[in-house]
Image (tube, rainbow, N blue to C red):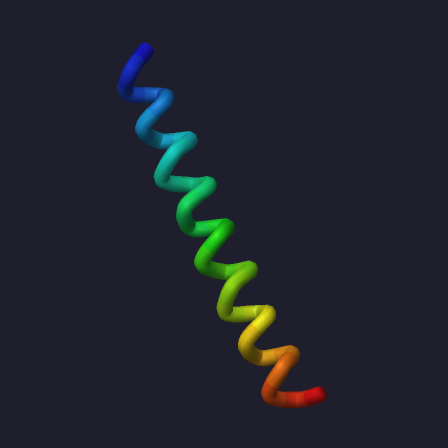
Length: 30
């Protein structure tokens, strides 16, 4: 199902963005 695949893709994109912002925060605090 392409719809379900889109949902997974969007979720993984959000996860990547969260990880990137977490890395930025770490570099600020360290």
